[in-house]
Length: 130
Image (tube, rainbow, N blue to C red; front, side, top):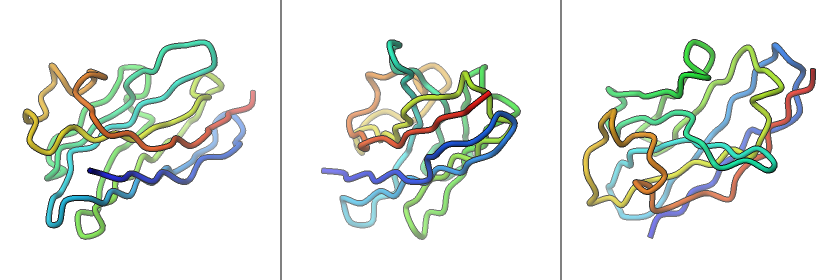
């Protein structure tokens, strides 16, 4: 079992920045591949970004490329999502997620797939005003 705790959401004006944090705990000694997703009211949950356990490989949705950065501190088993130049369209609940630890390696073809991820955090609200 993997536990995920997100933090860092809030209300920000358009053009502003926020940094989200996701702390993972679970199987001793395991460093987790992690992803970020978001869900706006009335819309489906969508992929935002993902990072491999080593931090070497990162993937982004087209809508956030150049504005968001995902990075990690493995000593803390924590992943961050730095969000700059925020837009009202970025509003939603942001979730971090982890695939099953014995699942496939992260690749471009599956990084954004909801079905890859087995464990989910409780979500943190991000609201961007115009």
